[in-house]
Amino acid sequence: MVGTVAPGTLELQEVHRFPNRPVRVAGTLHWDILALYQGVLDGLRTAAEAVRAKGNRLAGIGIDTWAVDYGLLGEDGTLLGNPVHYRDSRTDGTAEKVAAVLAPRDLYAATGLQHLPFNTIYQLTAAQDSPALGAARRLLLIPDLVSYWLTGEAGTELTNASTTQLIDPRTRTWSRTVADALGIDLSLFPPLRHPGDPAGTLCEESMAATGIEEPVPVTAVGSHDTASAVVGVPATSPDFAYIATGTWSLAGLELDSPVLTEASRRANFTNELGVDGTVRYLRNIMGLWMLQECLRTWEAQGRPQDLRTLLDEAARCAPLRSVVDAGAPEFIAPDRMPDRIAEACRRAGRPVPRTPAETTRCVLDSLALAHRRAIEDAQRLSGRTVRTVHIVGGGAHNELLCRLTADACGLPVLAGPAEATALGNVLVQARTAGVLTGGLTDLRELLHSTQPLRQYEPSGDQAAWSRAAALVEGGRAEGQEE
Ligand code: LFR
Image 1 (cartoon, rainbow, N blue to C red):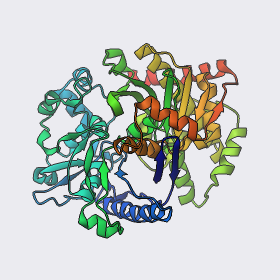
Image 2 (tube, rainbow, N blue to C red):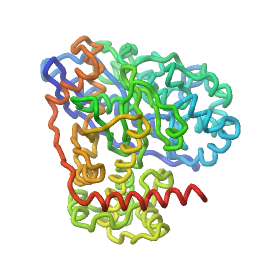
Image 3 (spheres, protein in one colour):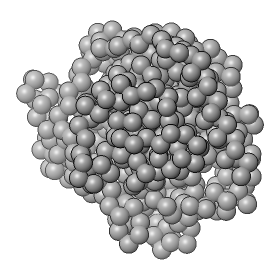
């Protein structure tokens, strides 16, 4: 993505897109990191050409990706194997092992992170006896790895570091207590960097690989994609909630300080660190992954679906007929998603969706309900009141999801920009480059005045949403008792 920024101007141009195809080999699901890196190099080449064609200069590069995963480097800097995908099953059962040495209550008090079975501490615990970890001299989170290859300089960007579950959100630095209790060697992580810090310049190898002739600076941005997406929320007043929608839905609030109460832990809310000293107080919801996986399954079964037609049909399906808990970890792993959704409906004694359109409606109704629950819980646990819900990310294009979310929450939804992550990335770089000044409020004003947004007013039957919410809540309570 190429961003063009000046006071009063903010434009984004997509110049290159490449697939991200995880590979299962010898029983483990990996990221094909070198294919991804080649995609980055090709993208930079095309970006530089696009910038040149406009008579401009490429002023900087910022990198963001998903969180929690990492690559290990050996003594000589070589990558020790392909990074393992957080959806791999190697962490199954690891949470119990960790809980035996560090009580969930103490872990939450120290890190404020929601329990997700794939947080980096669980991955490192699962990998404890692996030869690769034994030989590793350095651990780089995915955006830090890309940055290292581009520049030759290593660092650990803070917003993403906070998803390792090794950071204390009060001091915004490493928690020795947690690392020591779990036997994790913090010296594997290069020094922390903050969004906006310089992160080196393109090295000769990457200049040659991209055809870029100057050592363009790389800037640390909110390298966790969700941190950049939240910068990209075009809020004009402080009483907003956001839902960053894509593979995941990340729904919550931006706070000045973490909420580390026991109630917050029980509600599984996270205190990830944001740009400019903020806290991303949110919950992970399965997101459009559920639909993406259904589409992949239908295609593999020889009945590919056209997304637009499917969404039109889903909009005409009976509302709230079948709903599942879109926060349930049972949906994290890939494969057989339509069957798994049907099984969850059957278990809960609800009508089983039969057609792709009914399954799609079930996913979207369930996501809207999970959005509602997250935003209600976030307000209750933080003492804040929300008047507008911002939907950013790919889901901002999904009219049905936006409308259902407005209805479920009983609040106006402002949808867009879909490319909030790239915009948040570019805005932080532009500030470091001195092109923009000010805080998040100023950056968001620029977003609000330049990006197309769409407003959805709540309508529909509020009582029906409350009944459906109570049903899912009841199922969850039963599940916990088991
Ligand atoms: C979104 C995201 C989420 C994180 C998940 C796994 O792309 O970064 O914030 O919980 O992916 O890394």
